[in-house]
Image (cartoon, rainbow, N blue to C red):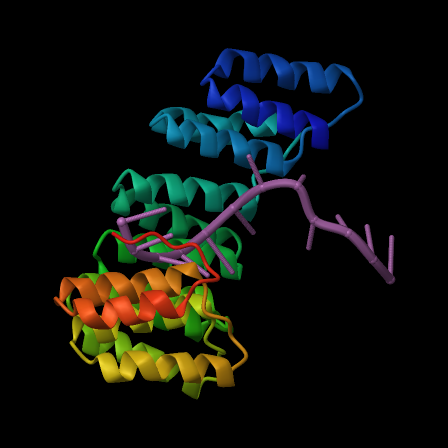
Length: 245
RNA sequence: GGGCCUGAUCAA
């Protein structure tokens, strides 16, 4: 099965969907059953090819192969819908999921909330965030990070920081992604002192800054014309290989 | 009892 899945994605890169379905028939005639992951991959591939209808059909086809569509597959579908800007459809799908399976898993929530953020529907994102809390679902860093960045993208850094505080109050540990987002926020706000301070926070939290962290800071500095500062940081980090924009 | 194969978040 593992080998087959690997083959599938290779065919997917060539967008050869006919060959993919042939391969599935092949799998079945051997005693090798396709899994839910197999179909999740196919949905993802159709999504990249912008073939929405085929994504839905894949759900039905999965059943003919004896695979019941599960959260794994629905998550893949949600992502495709959001990337195509089909917010309405995605909401409907989530609604259906909640009726069938009252408890949604955390990945599905994060995919959903992230999708809303990317589509700049932050008011909705907040509503669903609360709904998520009402169910006994504990938000993780993925969720908070998406919201923080989402609010930053719509020029509401204050709200972004509110979620950062909430994250800490609720005992969710910030990760590198969180810190990278914070660096960006402080750069946008011209509060570079606080941006610098984050690096010591990170060290204290045992969180290693990565290439993205430095890149974010450098871009932020350059954007505000602080070339001398950027230069200083740049020479201070010779280990990593980051590119100067 | 164990595994969990490409389902979720960041800069350029």
